[in-house]
Amino acid sequence: MQKLTPVERSALRAEAHGLKPIVLIGEAGLTANVLKEISLGLDSHGLIKVRVFGDDREARAEMYDTICEKLDAAPVQHIGKLLVLYRPKVETEKARSTSGKGLREVTIVKPSPSGTKRPSVTKVLLKGNERVTQGGNIKRAKPLQKSTKKSALGSK
Image (cartoon, rainbow, N blue to C red; front, side, top):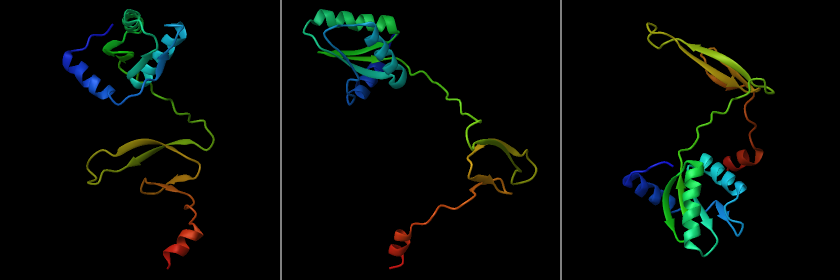
């Protein structure tokens, strides 16, 4: 279970004020699937609200502690039937496919403006209708089509 300072907890409470509950715990209680959904919500959002249906306050407090222990989350707030949980988001980097249809990776080397410093080297993923100009800029091979209706309206 993570620990938060009072200042962090206060800031997270303020941030959670406008959130809506994304997980609802019903009559079946805290099942493996509910824990999985809470974990997915914490991974993608970081700060979530969980609504627990049921009138037993002790059971809600026990669920709150269990969730925090099993998912390594920090308890932020427990008001009535709402539980607010926090766990830092998991940063996942999406790998871009260079073998996709029409995508190709191009290395652009631009000389420095003064000519005395090192040139800047950047790798760019180009789509099928794009090309690199002599100056190292990316341009579309074909310009976007102009709307005849918009051009007719503009001439009035």
